[in-house]
Picture 1 (cartoon, one colour):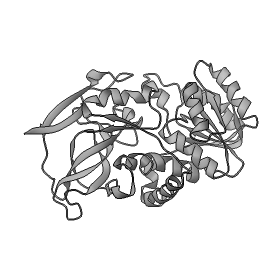
Picture 2 (cartoon, one colour; picture 1 turned 45 degrees about the horizontal axis):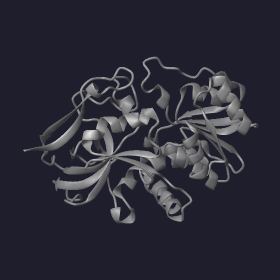
Picture 3 (cartoon, rainbow, N blue to C red; picture 1 turned 60 degrees about the vertical axis):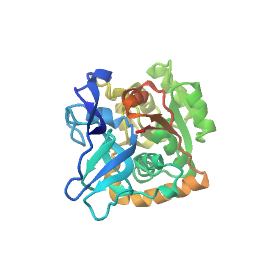
Picture 4 (cartoon, rainbow, N blue to C red; picture 1 turned 90 degrees about the vertical axis):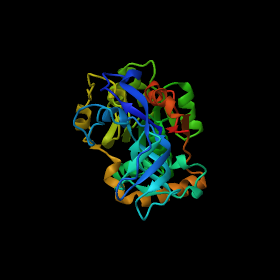
Length: 337
């Protein structure tokens, strides 16, 4: 019986992924592995990091093997089990793949979740998942914001960036977000509470640096970097003395065969700034702590998180490409229905 649709990586993308880099296939539903279970995935997270995992290059995680399904954090229900702690019907979140059924041997990323506490299980891939926690720990533990400081966020209308700005406001900071287009910039201020928004579209590096300077005349004390490229170059020209830069992502470079790098890195030296590469995996043992605080802020309305849910595993490729076209606002999720 061939009831398990799987979204496979067939070849390494060269630059921007094309549809023929992938293949949607059907296979038999797997049996539970020894000491594990089979998870019926209901939602899969679509993240810029997945593009990096497709390259055969050194990284913080091994590359996705060719002919394997594309790796993804998922949330779903146990279908069959050979593990005493995971019963059929239990809801579970873990690092699995874009496929309808995953054979799972529990590891440090596997956790049962209480879906009665949320309006949708997809929340465990957004506000209560890695996205919300990336914003939480990256800002509070790495950048350590102080009241009155200016926090500059690139990709500010995205899943992580939108939450970073809101947490910064809770901690008494002034927030400036960078996004693409007037609609997204308006959303930063009206929906996410940013004090100012800068539209990067149609601007050279120098013009963008000038636009940032208009709203950060004393420079940025914290830069939360999600984009890289010319946006990062413009930000580097607007650092306050002893600024802290949290390097969380470089989405502008993930599809580029030639990496742009940072061309104004000398400003880190001139402003005696610090540049901190940041991975959420360093805080796995504190996820419960961060999740509890995020839950309080969501419940009180102090933090809002939008989800862009695309439907159907048959739609996996166009849904994934929304990350790079700028079409999505908030957390991009694929519902495997």
